[in-house]
Amino acid sequence: MVPAVILGIGLGVGLWALVVWAVPPRPSLGMVLARAAAPPAPPPILLTAHTGWAAKLGRPFIASLRALGLPGVRLSRDLAVIGRPIATHLADKATLAMAGLLLPPVMQLLFTLAGQEWGFTFPVVAGLVLAVAGFVLPDVQARAEATKRRAEFRHALSSFLDLVWITLAGGAGVDSALNDSAGIGQGWAFSQIRRALDTARLTRTTPWSTLRQLGEELDVTELAELAASVSLAGTEGAKVRASLAAKAGALRTHQITDAEANAQSATERMSLPVMALFLGFLTFVTYPAVDQVLNGL
Image (cartoon, rainbow, N blue to C red; front, side, top):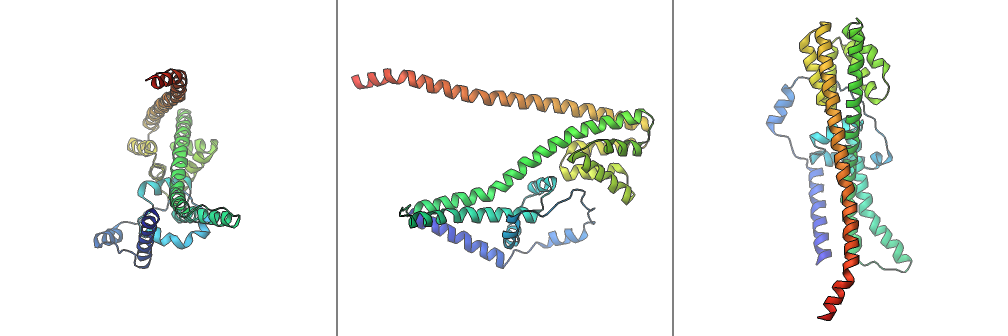
């Protein structure tokens, strides 16, 4: 019964995916009108690049996965942060899922040629489990890498604000202070800030508008709030300097709080192995006595 149920589920999912690929669902009239009436979005500041052999192999499955509504809004932001195109991500998911699905049958064939039999149920179940794991693995990696990059950007933003505040205190203008401070730092975060400032200079817009756009694309609320508060302060150096100092202090406080929370969670995780070791030792000590009692009854 188990192989028949598994094969039936796989056949149903395959037929459903084939129908979705052949006849993709049409968007509603409200979505089409909203898309047509929406103002054109500014070009993204973050760059993406198509890389990887898996993206080439899984390219035929991209349209089907997009028709299913993948990826979500949150995952799309994470992919923009790490610089991975949505098409490449979906192709990776499809390639890893197909590899996980086909790996157990191939291994079974090799072992059968060697004279060993695995049966029928194990390759089917193992293939489905590996296919699901391969389909979910790129999402987990993207979220973890995006979280790491956001934390890195917040640290760099705190240093950037300190540099801008010091430069403004020395008598520099707002634009020169921003560009000079961005040019001092190195790394991925400062390169994104420099790109946002270059975009503002080339498009003749205020640097705070492009920095706010960068904060929205990165999903870093601190940068978007900073740009909004400083744009309200105007171009006066004293008000801008006060806003930057307040935001830099808030960022440092937030980073200290996060560090303390991470240290506390690490301490709690360390207590679990000690507790498991204690329970194992207690079981090892009490087992002979409990065995003697049970055998004596």
